[in-house]
Image (cartoon, rainbow, N blue to C red; front, side):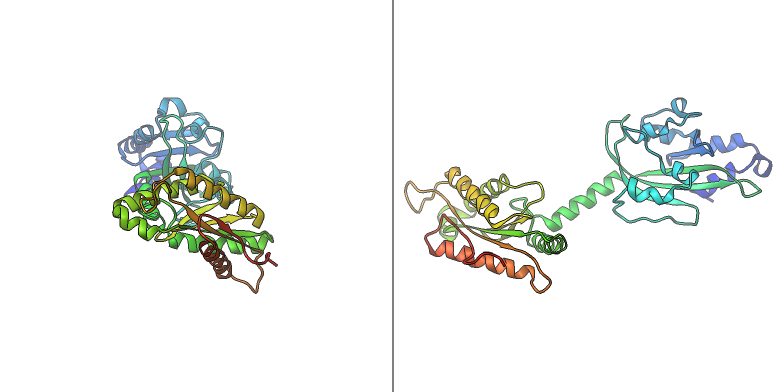
Amino acid sequence: MTGTTTIQRFLEPASAHGDRAFAHQLMEMLAIPVFVLDTSCRVMIWNRACERLTGMTAAEVVGTREHWRSFYDEPQPTLADLLIQERGGEIPSIHPRPSSGRSAGQPGHLSTESWFDMPRVGQRRYLALDASPIYDERGRLTAVIETLRDMTDEKMAQIALEQLATRDGLTGLANRRCFDDTLNAEWARALRQRQPLSLLMVDVDNFKAYNDANGHIGGDECLKRIATAVSSEMRANDLVARYGGEEFAVILPNQSLKGAASVAERIRTRVEQLRVPNRLALGEHVTVSIGAATALPSPDTSASELVATADAALYRAKHMGRNRISLPLSEPG
């Protein structure tokens, strides 16, 4: 037997499985961070691997209920505490987003994954936790053992892969896939909450000619500077995406058409103020044209209609001479 099963066996009453001191010795030798709580939530065992992970020594916590200090800045129950107190149902409120969705394994066991502040070591760590009950020969709970697994490196690698899948490699903005997913999600939320949803389509004026004159490296640098300018005007819940080529899209949740027009004008002005030289015309600089649109989602409409309206407005801005914003010909119904 290995892992938690082995530990449980040796932590059972000494009359059944020999000297309990052997269990303590076994725990100290384990490379897996482990701690054990008695039924009053006091620390019985805090092994060396747990000391290395948390930065807190056994001398500081054994016999106390202070083990929470290893993981949190303020008092919160650990998984073992929740199991002892029969509060397993509170896990979603304490760890609301365990990314892998791990669930309790065997009946009476609890498992989850989450980020922890780890105040003593001064680093946030992503831990996988498992809490298992230990019973005596009469079936009474005598202790709970919690094992911890540091998955920070794996989690960071997962985040990096997710970013590769949703981020534009040149500008660092959301890519088209992320834009499509976010627009559909925001449309559904706006429908539920009966709020407006606005969209800006931003296109770099005469970019093909600019790219030809300055080369791809110069064109790429221009796009990156414009991406930064557009992003600087966003609220926390807005999304800027590289829609394709020299075109950007901006999702503005719960924003009126008037508000969207104001954001569009700030973007247009900020790009103009970059004063990126336009070699095609002496003394002129790179500009953008912007189409704005707003929708009040209803069950018989779709997000694609909002995109089409914003696209049409962008076309009008181009047709009217560029370096300007354009709104829909009619207000949203």
